[in-house]
Every structure is written in structure tokens, then in C-alpha cells.
Amino acid sequence: MKLLRMLFLAMLSSSVFFACSTNTKSGDENSENGEVASQACTYSYNADSTTFKWTAYKYTTRAGVSGTFDGIEVKDTKTSDNKLEVLKGAEFVIDPFSVNSGNEERDPKVVKYFFGSMANTDKITGRINMIEGNEASILVTMNDRHVDVIGHLAVEGNKVTLTAKLDMNTFDAMEAVNALNQECHDLHTGEDGVSKLWPDVSIEVSTVLNEACK
Image 1: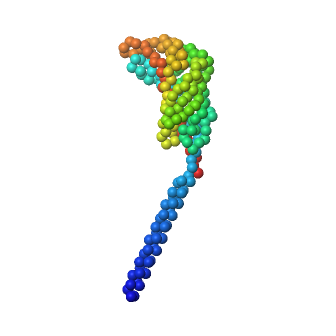
Image 2: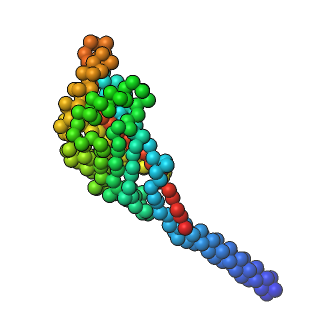
Image 3: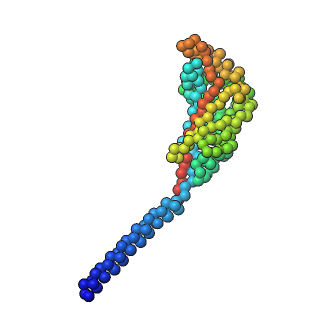
């Protein structure tokens, strides 16, 4: 009887020990999960982290010539818990005369013969009207033409990148393309002897969003 009583007490102690251990562990997990679940983050636009790159193409082999604009303003961004919603409805204004291709001889020609051949080129404006999935609809105004351009979005951490192509045909700007190509005829002539400036321009805009969590 004494042996049975000792065995019973040992089993009871063990069950209490494991029950306490299980409850403590579960409580810790719940606490950790609750801590993660209660954390909320919001995102906002960071102008200092934003980069803008355009790429035009020359020669029949489509050699890229890239640059940026030194005068760009972005406004009407949002603070949101959705990274892409930060840019929905955002507007941008570009000073085309601030074009910067890293070539002091090329830039004045782009200003004079390309943008100078367009109407009302004191600024290029745009607005991100719609974001759906990884696509954005951007209303771009240039050469007195309002064109809906489809862009593609990519998110990597807090970095959001927007890429798109602008076709000068849709902006009725082939006169500007031809004027610049004529001025730079020899510089746009490849090994095949053909002088070519393509009508499409690729753009890439990247920004690293501010993050605030609590």
C-alpha cells in the first residue's frame, strides 16, 4: 500500500509539472503571436530616396542612352498601410529643360530640337490614376496630348519601382524625334550606315518608402 501511494503521488506530481510546463509555453507563444499581430506599420513617400531614369534608343541595334531630369516634383502621395496605395493619386511635374544625360553637348540639343519642337513644353505632368495588382494607369500630359500609359510595379522590401514605356507616336511627337535625329544624324548612325532614333522611351522610377511601426 505504501508503495502504491508513493507511485500515485509521483504520477500526480509529474502530471502537474507537465501541465504547468505546457501552459507556460502556450502562454509564451500566445504572447509572442499577440505581439506580432498587434504590430501595425504605415508607409509614406520619401522624396530623398527617389530616382528617375529615362532610356532612349539609337541605331537600328537599339543602343540605349540613359539620363534623368534634375527638376522633378512629386505631390499628393498618401500615408497608408498598403505600400502601393502610397502612390495612388500621386502627381508629378517634370521640367524638361532640366534634362541630364551626363553629356554637356547632348543635353542642349535635346532641349532645343526635341522638347523645343513640342507645344507647351515648359513642363511634363502625370498622375497615377489607378493601381491594380502590379499595373498602374498613368495619365501623362506632354506636347498638349493626354495619354494613358500602363506602367508595371515591383515591390522589394520597402522599395517600389515603376517601369513604363512612352511612345512618341501617341503624343504626336514624331516631329520632335525626327528633328533631334536630323541634328544628331552622324551620332545616331550605326555600323550599318543607318541613322536611327527610336520613337519609344523607357522610364524607371524607384523610391524607398518611409516605414513607421507601432
